[in-house]
Length: 122
Image 1 (cartoon, rainbow, N blue to C red):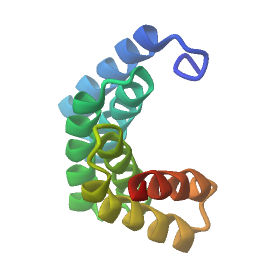
Image 2: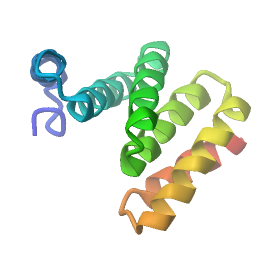
Image 3: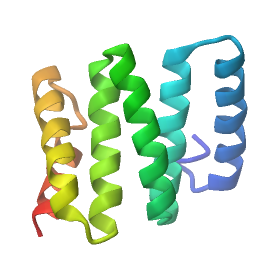
């Protein structure tokens, strides 16, 4: 809710606390989710290199878990971060992966993934 209302600093504090707790438990799925949430915050702030770093980390964690929705999300985040850094060609494969998985899952996130794929093609 804080992130959606634009209170990004406050949201980041809670995401980092949740990430710390997930690592301590350990809760690998939680670590992947909260790392992805931080990648989203970096994207919202226009911090493209940081978003790329966090998205790569979240994607790797999701791949280790085999969690398709998280893989799609991380792939889309990574593609968007790359496209915003002028590296759309590099991001295209990640965006395509996100589209394919979200389509297969019937996810409401498909439209956003398709928009990122289009951005990578520009």
